[in-house]
Length: 251
Ligand SMILES: [Zn+2]
Image (cartoon, rainbow, N blue to C red; front, side, top):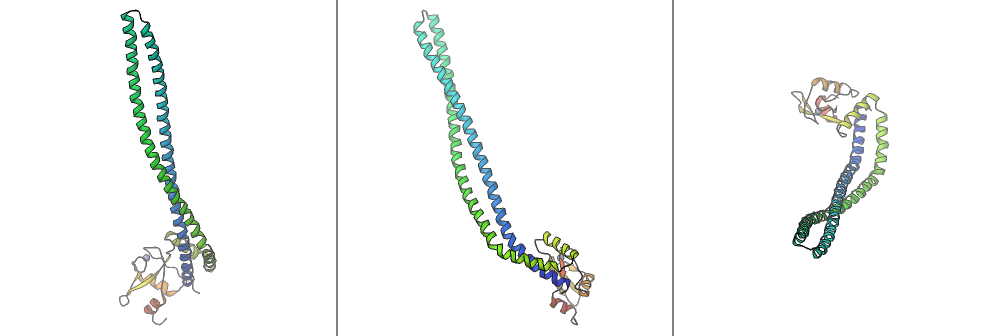
């Protein structure tokens, strides 16, 4: 068979291989997205837990401080009873009042901290919900990938054999050109030539609609062993039988 026909056979099986693997690829991409989102939520969860710990540690410190203030106040109250004159009494009382003010400041601070913990706990519960939801989606994405891989395995193995056979009869240069174009355009490596206007001898590329030069057409008509690449979209050009017949009725 001429080169172009061999390339068309390869093109057909190559597209099927790519079509099958792209189903698996899209499932892989989807799974990766879910994994990344899950990691982001886990990070958020860790940060939330860290912040809660910090606030709780601060609350413990405040409680220790107020505890020691209470001890000191109790001790001063005992001293108050033992004072011998007004001056001493006033001094101890003043100290007690200062300590009470300090205690009030700590109490206010503790309330602020407790409200921060509460807000963080609410966020934690929201984060937990999102995490569970993401884990469910991730699990089904993993199952979907596995299913698609299994589904195509047999068919893909068969097509790979066909692809190998189709590629084996194509000269190395042409094959490497074909592979590179197919990789660049997701398997869309070849384009037929359309007749725009037979009388005016106007022809175009079926892939990009750009006008094909008469030179290129003549080369293709001359031999099916020639590779002609579209100057605009890079596809390997070919003539369908009916197009060839229309252009050269004698053939
Ligand atoms: Zn083109």
